[in-house]
Length: 157
Image (cartoon, rainbow, N blue to C red; front, side):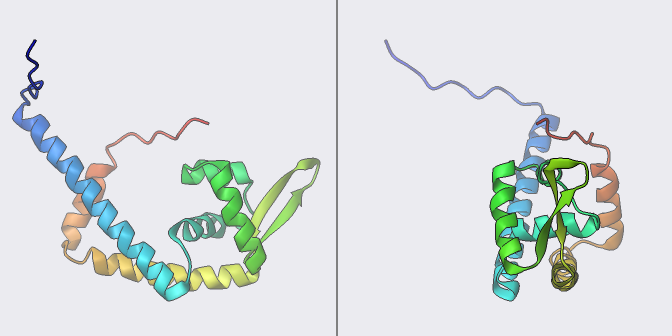
């Protein structure tokens, strides 16, 4: 019995264009992310996941539970635990007990952590500005509007 390769389903032009868009978005995201990873490593000897954890904590001055960090960043608690351990060892993060709940702790940036993150965040913003400078401002605003049409669905635990 002779087997033939399955034929690709015929795609409507609009479907093909949306697929091309998705692939371009994915490629662009990967390129930008790789550049940010390299710059964070070279300039601050840190990683993008550590930067992301610090960013979440910077926005939440009172601190966050580990589960809240993992939910915000859409990663597992295990991933967050290792990052937080290293940040604690560096003195940029502390764990604080939650009053009335012996099992719960909050993770919070120290003053040192807040200062270090502020410097990193400023450079990160400048890098993003540089990497996206190929797009005119009005197109950036239009693209933001387009992407805001997508529903925001959080990952279920």
